[in-house]
Length: 71
Image (cartoon, rainbow, N blue to C red; front, side, top):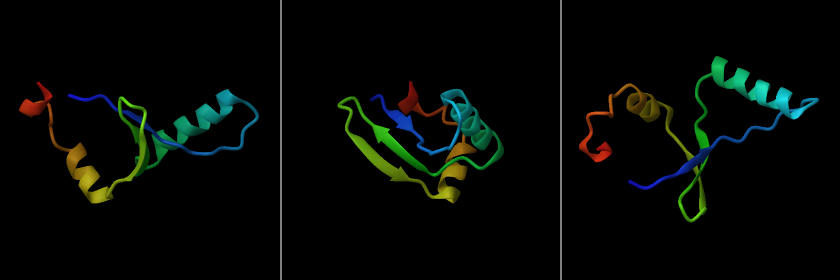
C-alpha cells in the first residue's frame, strides 16, 4: 500500500499557536468532519480533494479491516 499525508487547513485568529490548535480541536470535536482536504503522496505532490458527505459517511460506517487490500 502507498502512504499519504492528509491535511485539513483552517485559518483561526488566535493569540498563540496553542490557542489556534485548541480552536481546531474544538471545531473537529464539535462539528461534522471536514470534507475538504489536501492529500500528498510519497513524492510530496499535493492534491486538493473534496468529499461527498453521503459517500464519506457510508465509507466511515463500514468495517474496512476485513478488506483483503488492507492486509
